[in-house]
Image 1 (tube, rainbow, N blue to C red):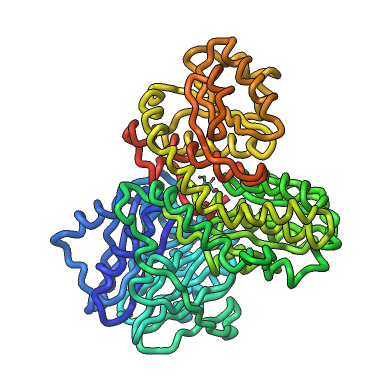
Image 2 (tube, helix red, strand yellow):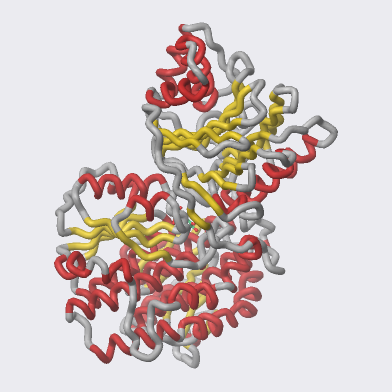
Length: 614
Ligand code: F6R
């Protein structure tokens, strides 16, 4: 989704901003732009629809000199993607330039009020309304820019991260946030600004994360000044971001998504390290251990999440109900937040999010907090908004996920949920010791198991060629692997644009089997587990109606081969960890079909990596 980069210091700002914008490209966007304050104080805005590389070409030969500037990648919410709606936006007088992530919900009311005061608008954006509101407050209140920003933001309903530069001021950027991330990187006599700290780690590892309703005055050569909307000073807390640049690069793979699929043995090793003690099999999750009573007394656990994280949560439901005997509900965060849900003080709400910035999940967390529930986060991006809004939690520690389609975050989330369920089950005495040890051992062996599952890449790639023609796919699974089927279908549709539907295998005969003919391939997860025989029958039913079957089967299993057209063998592990194994060929299948179709797998159309608007 939209991205922000800013710089003020001694360097030329434009190259710093362009590099940062490139790093934010994976989040998905449709236009890009920069505002540079030249040494004489004049602001120039350059912006265009399309890619950051297009913006670079557009800038060639133009004067982009200046040591202060702001840049933006836009993902359209108000007004189509075009040059005019791209950010930055000038205020009416051209004295202020602004970039904005988020949505101003009351922008129509504000725009109408500004129109009655003679303002006109070039774009269809809510952001242009905001920059003019700031200008109006400054002019009518005869106040400083910083004060005008605070006063204007008090009138705004919605979400924002903004950065502002001003004509004639070559040393100061003003930034603010509410429900949309903003990090300030601290250098030596210089400052960097970004909606995602990872985009500027080439320059610094020291960051200050703005909190909701905070305004920062970022001035070259001066200490960072942060205040709330009433002008009261806030504490400036600097945090270290430990991340290497190589973690952000493709490492020889054609796409980030493929790199991230192949990284999973290592990312799961990182995820488990120090959390399952190899000798004793003890599980150490401080987020749980420091809140033991909450988990011992929990009446219910409610997962709130979106997309892939919601699929992982469905697996979490199986894990926790099986091992902890606590009732679990899994909610789409977007539905939960608007449903007036019933929550009890002894409920635990687990918010699951790779980015930690998903607007609906964050809103669900706020709602749960107001209802008095204990909130636990399972997130990847350290220091992001959701972990900061929860009472406790566990990071999945799988490193930056750049490909828009989530892969290693899914396996990290399920791994954390398995450790959590094992630990809580043991604390509550609802799990047998023998089973506990078997699963803990299997978690330790996960990197090797996933490495073996990655051997499916070659046969899956060949299979993908055969099925590039398909317009629809059905994915089937049961038990632990029903959510895996949903995840496989989501992966395919988001990056190949082929329609795909995930279903519990037994549901076929309740309607969807009517879709089956020779043009409708079915991917069936039929690994050896307690529903294996049942899944086999479901496969037979599809076969009998002329459907083509691709089956994901356990290594050495010959039985499914008799009915399926194609079999992909995966290694075995304990049943509750099988989703981590069977998802690997499904990730690969989606990847190869999408690349054979010439799709942009890392930045699929219409999608954003971090969905910071609802
Ligand atoms: C799918 C995908 C999305 C995200 C969803 C939630 O591949 O990436 O469905 O899972 O937007 O995002 P997070 O986990 O960041 O809250």
